[in-house]
Image 1 (tube, rainbow, N blue to C red):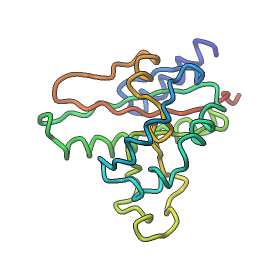
Image 2 (cartoon, one colour):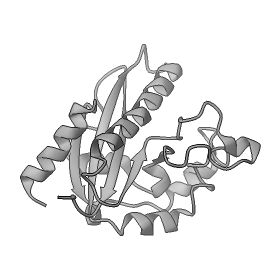
Image 3 (cartoon, rainbow, N blue to C red):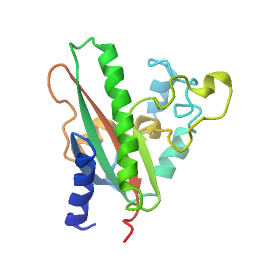
Image 4 (tube, helix red, strand yellow):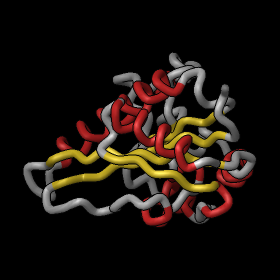
Length: 186
């Protein structure tokens, strides 16, 4: 892909509110099927409780295969400020803001990217309470955001490959997202 096109996509991301953006070819992305085991331990409390988290989002091998059908990924990050390293509320607020950024960026890229998959950080956060808990279909499948990790993407390695810093200072939390795509529409 032409350098000017890549630069333009990264500018769209930062203009939409991303702290920074990068670009990587999907064939370079490290996929880790073993991430499912971490999800199954349910450290975040979302396993089986959110449509965009395992096991509801789909089997990790299928998600990896789906992602690998794309050629490129526009990677974006946001950095949230925390009161201290134990500021769980601040981390949650930053995650919600990050996935809202993913939606805003999707609007900005609408019509630019061809077929694409939007990925965010952690659980979806669109609804205050996921309809999965009430055994109802997803209330907003067009807005729902699955995570990079649900697709088996090693985020720390993705950050390095795309030229972004994974750790951005004391009392900060950095979240990543991305858009998988094959082409730019003319």
